[in-house]
Image (cartoon, rainbow, N blue to C red; front, top):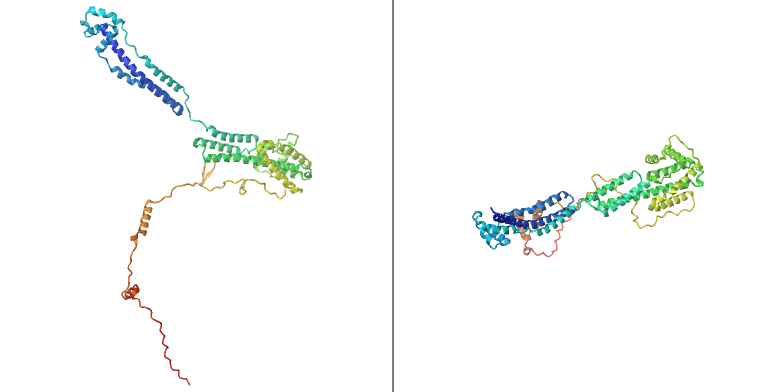
Length: 483
């Protein structure tokens, strides 16, 4: 194999490479573009598809290689290669003529003449300009792989989270301020958590809205009750702090005040006044201890007082006379009045309850009151009463995740038996069909047949006879007289 054969073979390889590149570059651009689009969709819309990114990218890069073997299998004829090489070398047909002869039969002098032209001839270049489209597609694929993977949103949408955050924040504020019973806080937190989980799983349906409204209503009710308990304690303290109450037995006054404070501690521990040592703290603890020993407080109230540290030390007593009870009531009334600022919007309930209690106190002690007690004018339904609810439901009721109860009602079509319906249709058709009438023949005895036949023949009926005078019966001779 001389230089001419080697150059013809090199030209054949270059031609196959050019065809492979021209077939592979467009396929590669298409594959990378499809892979980039698929990766973008996975990154943006498929939360659990992060593991698909690498296989899609590799598939977009490898899949276009299937067109390369087909392009490489195609070979050009030797005569075509010799003609192209002759044009590139500029030998004016001499190269083509020598290529038709075997390498051993060629004249050496002609081969030496072609050697310089063959060495200076340039083979066709590969079409690298076709690689711009694959480069752009590869850049798009790299950008798609760099996108952050979308994940399943943890929690509720922002518009819905606002409602739950507001309720949870209000519950935390009431708990921190001590305006709600401590035992009710975990229950309300659990209800809010269950409602949030239900809303995250099923969305904000009607039961979820009702459950959230019920939680907010319970918070409003707890605040209103706390305001009422504070008003009651303030009314008792102000009543006992009056000079007219100083002559009453101190023990009785201290017991009433202890009961009011115990109720306030069980409902709203943050509103119970904290007296400093030497400023009535010992007297207050003694009054609470006496009321507890006398059984005037419930176990829940006693537990609330112990939690606040107001139950008093065991065995420690302080005698309270009328003047001491009056001073203690005055200090407590002053400290209780400071709790109005903690109530916020519930201060109106406090003022209404104070007015009612003070009017009742003036009526009991004499003086001018507000009259027979007409109810205030409101726009509410007078038939509705406060504190209503669903209690003591019978067994078998369905409890929803939000705490509401469903009475197991359902709407569905009636279950009709097909055979019974067909039988009823046949019976109706048989009953109302014109041919369904029956002609029955009544059995008549032989001696009655003539009478029955005459009865149905109107023309055979005799005309009514004219009335005739009834003959008088023959007269009978008088009976002989009996002697």
